Image 1 (cartoon, one colour):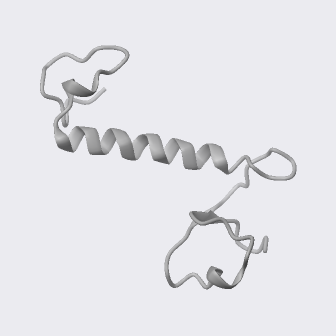
Image 2 (cartoon, one colour):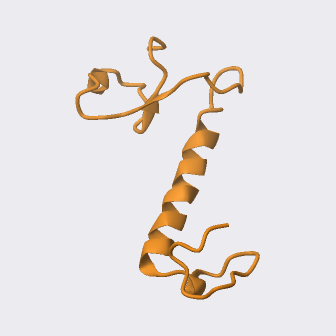
Length: 78
């Protein structure tokens, strides 16, 4: 574990939000969303995740595909 973003020197397991600074809470929430995104990569026809995904950016040209995932895509799969 790291001490970055903590308000105390020790941390409970499971983590209590009041032990984190605002920066620590932001990092924790970002981590949770990243794990959710990783788990969503298994939402495929086979239940297997792709080897490589690409996160959506405004210049990726994926807006023209109606079935494109809003956060990520598998290159060449559409």
